[in-house]
Each structure stands twice: as C-alpha cells, then as structure tokens.
Image (cartoon, rainbow, N blue to C red):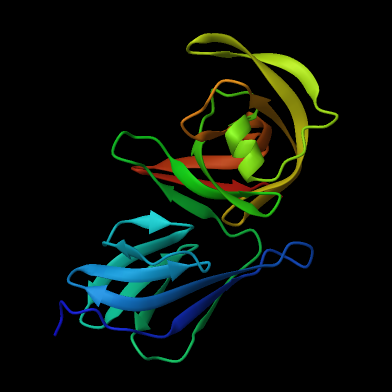
Length: 214
C-alpha cells in the first residue's frame, strides 16, 4: 500500500572534500508516506521530506511508489526501498546549494568543530555569532576568550570573542574562524562574514550557491 510505511535500506553518500577533510555523509531511505520520503540523515531521527525540501545538503526531487530521487551537490540519485547501498561521490570543490526558507532566509545545517548546529546565513554579521546556550551545546570552551560587545537589534550586549577550529557547510569548510558568543539569547546561530568572506556566493532564484575559492 503506497501510503503505508515501508522499511528500507541505506544510501551512503561519501562527500570527499580532499585528503585533509574527507567527510562521510550517510542518508537512509527508511520509508515512503504518500508524497513524502522518510530519510535518516547522518544517523539523526527519521525526517519526512517532500519534494523541494532540503536538509544537510540533501534535497528531495521526487517521491514515487517505494522510491525517491535526491540531489546532493548538484548530482541526482534514485533511491529504492530494499536496494543495496549506493555510493555517491562529491568531487573536491563542488558547490553547496542552499534553498531559501519561505521568509527568504537561508538556514543551513552546519558543523562547528565537527558538531552539528543550525545556522542562518547573515552577510550583515561581521562574525559567526552564537549565544551561551548554543556554545555550551557545541562543547566550546570559553576560557581565554576575549571580552567584547556586539550590537544587536535590542542594543549593545556583552560577548566573548574566540576562534573556532573549523566551520563547515556542505562541501565548504574553513578553519580558525573568528566568532562571538554573546550573553543575550539568539533564536538561531548566525553564519557571519568571518566564514563567508573568501567564499563565492551566487544567487540563483530561491537558491544560494556557495563554493570555496581556489
């Protein structure tokens, strides 16, 4: 029955970022519910995704009866329930494509020092910005961080300035990225210019194409 949950096998997407930063991304098609594909991305909880939705660089193109077509790094692959794992490689320097939210903002599943964090692209922010709760969830040590202040919509707030070992969005990774951890709460972490500087950004309709510069 098409609308019944069907358990499936795994598609492993090996995103090769080069010898120094090879990262494996795994995606499992564990079911189809109507027009939605039930995907497990990087071992997280199953997520029902409709065509056009994107998470962690995986965009659903279409969902069929026991199958789904996904796009990763501008490559497409058909997934089938019960099929053997399929490897999909992303060449070094391949672009990462983000899709705008209904409000026009670009929200991404990034990694800071290897830990997952949800972030919003903000070209108006000088630095990557987190609040203390987000920093704690990422296991960041604030010892040795420099006191500073940042200007927000609600005024100037106290913050600490530090360097992050690495920040990665899809295939784009930068190391030794300056950031601030502010005392005032942030609804979502901000991916500011300390990461975006040196990254090629191209708008294509409701998409933002992000690619490391040579």
